[in-house]
Length: 158
Ligand code: ATP
Ligand code: MG
Image 1 (cartoon, rainbow, N blue to C red):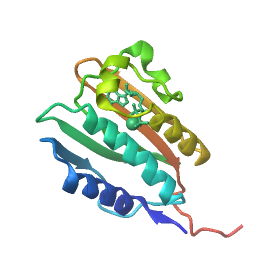
Image 2: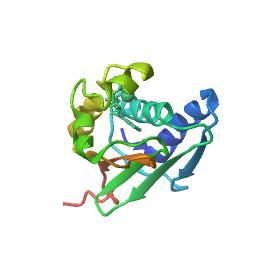
Image 3: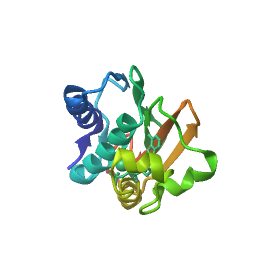
């Protein structure tokens, strides 16, 4: 039932890397060993697909998208960073609301409904994780999310 998140994440990144049409470089800062988590892979695929799609949508030509997985004591922290136009501070929390889009004009050109991150938040919350964003206007955006995990899942001796 456990899923190796390292392999799972790498496969999703591979799929985007093979099909992207823009001049955007992918940089992976992932562990080289398995990290087992209990996740619904269909739902997590939907979450990660949307975050990467957003990152690509707002990436400039020649930009870089950085993927990172960090182990914390009781969770893993995943982040996806782009070098796009960024999001103004005052709008940062609202991007997880249904139908919210930062700038109607720029968003209309980009397509989409404004549901992607709201669905992502629902799914990450259902996995007992958290999701948030940081951004610097003109510099880029990073979306973070966490998933709970236990380092030693085989020690069931109680
Ligand atoms: P959908 O995902 O439903 O196709 P969408 O991408 O517009 O539509 P969300 O993924 O929920 O919707 O994102 C909400 C809004 O947050 C976007 O419209 C955009 O304004 C802003 N946003 C999200 N990700 C980024 C990013 N990486 N850089 C800049 N703005 C972003
Ligand atoms: Mg989206």
